[in-house]
Image 1 (cartoon, one colour):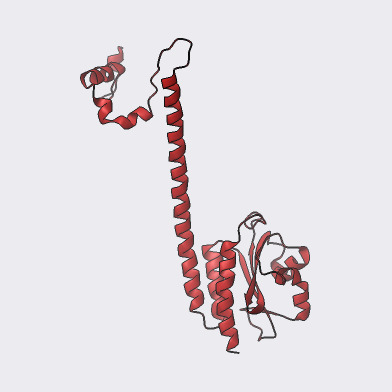
Image 2 (tube, rainbow, N blue to C red; image 1 turned 90 degrees about the vertical axis):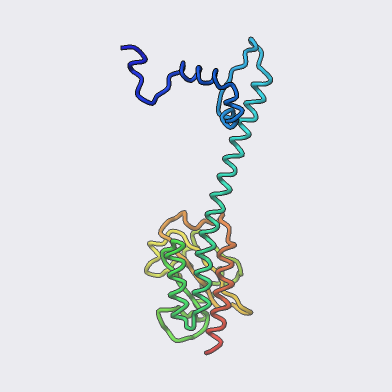
Length: 228
C-alpha cells in the first residue's frame, strides 16, 4: 500500500505542505507567531550559529514571560475569589446583633468558605454561658497567656496545654490551628480556628488575612458587649 493510500482524508503530507509554502512565500509574514514555535536549523559547520543562539534565547525568554503571565493571572483569580469570600464574611459580621449571630457568621465563613474545620470564640469575663462563646476566668486567662499576651495571630501546632484547653474534646482531631487575639482598646478574647489537616495552618504562613479578621471581629464584639 502506498503512502498516498495510507493517508487519511483531510490529512496533509510533507510534500503537500512544502508545495503550499512554495506557492505562498509570504505565509510566515502573515503568520509570524508560528516562527516562535518552529525550529529552523542554520548550518554553520561545527560552529554555533549566533543567529540560532539568539533565536533560542529569545524563544526561551518568550516562554518564561508566558509562564510568568499565566502565574500572575492565576494569582489574580485566586485573589478575586478570596476577596469575595472576605467581603461576605465582613458583611455578615456587620449585620450581627448578638453573640449567637457572630458565632454563626464565623462558623459559616471560616468553615464553609475558608475550609476550616472548627471555630471557637473565647471571651474574657463572666458573661452568660451559651453555645456562642466560652467565657474565660482569670485561671483560664493565665493558661492562655502565651496566646493572649500578643496582638499577633499564631499559626501551626499550638503548645499542648493551650491546644488541649482551646479545642477540648476535639483536640485529638485538630492537627493545626490559627489563634487570633481580639483587641479593641482592651483584650476581649481569642478566636481559634482548627483544621484536621496538619499542613493547613503553618507557622511560616502570612497572617495578614487573620489580622484583618481579628480587627473586624473585635469591633463587632466591642459593640455587642458594650450593650451589656
